Amino acid sequence: MIGYTTIGSKDLNKAVAFYDELFALVGGKRVMEMDRIKFYGTESGGAMLAVCTPADEGEQSVGNGQMVAIPGGSIEGANALYKKAIELGATCGGEPGQRFDFFYGGYVFDLDGNKLCFFQMT
Image (cartoon, rainbow, N blue to C red; front, side, top):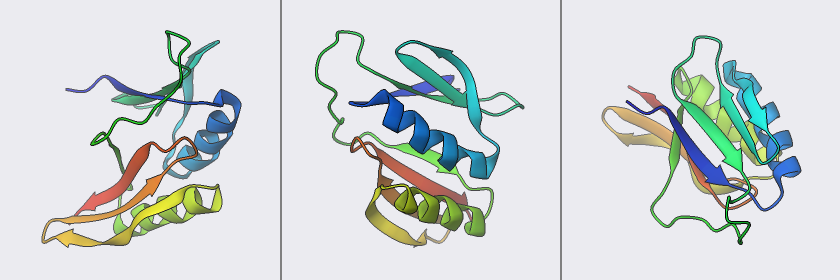
């Protein structure tokens, strides 16, 4: 249902370095790119995450209530993504843990303040 989600960046080079290393943990990589936008996905296709500088050349800002959720493939995978994001400079938005009977997740804010969730349905 979702083709891709786009988040903005104040410093695209820093964002690309962050996401290149982070998504490598789950087989993700840059699959398409232009000057101001980079798309991340997997070989199998599916939904993508795009990181870009705003098209209007204005200031990047974080959407209140917006979040991108990235499956870890397992609880261990969700934990690994959370840990790697923190190592790469993200800040904690909620340590990994069981949130509901059916949902395990950890939350971070990336280098630009975009909220990410690394999760596993349990």
